[in-house]
Image 1 (spheres, rainbow, N blue to C red):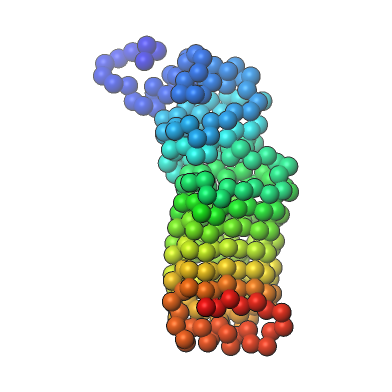
Image 2 (tube, rainbow, N blue to C red):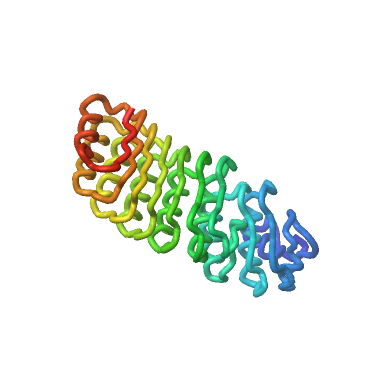
Length: 277
């Protein structure tokens, strides 16, 4: 604050800008001076309890760097907007933000209490990764916003074949976003959406995607409360889709009518694995 003159409390953005420009040493665990001097190649700030002001500070400092290539910002307390800003800057500078490396073929983030902001940072990094084939985000809380970010990455990613998003509370909004990605993605073969409360609307969106998707072979929709309407929509899609070979649609409150529709849709299909009840 000694860098700022005038009366009253300075705006947060101005304070953070002053810290980024003139701060010395380490502030909030962030090596401000080293970043400004461009002497940091890797930075691990994961799980530090950092809030939005810290995200803003990193966002101010990253554009000044040229040697920083890998930064881990996961498991902090950033909001969606600050994560989006960081992701944008990371994309522009070619800096990884999730701790993943470009040569990884598998990434496991299961049960790590990840939030929407974390998924946004992971999705940003997916655009840099040319060999990652498996991404496991099961049992987190990325929500609809996180699913939307992952879906956007899927639209351009040409290598990821296995995506596990079970138990993430993505809801119908998240499922609709994933479904839109499935319509254009040409490589994903395995998708798990267990326990995500996608409901009938989410199931209908996935069904529409299945009508045009020509690569997905394994799909799990276990425990999503899709009901009879959702099950019937999936059944109609299966009449068109000849690529899917395994479907888990258990625990969905679909009743006899929905179950029969799905069973009849794949009746006689050689090698098809249906988990219905």
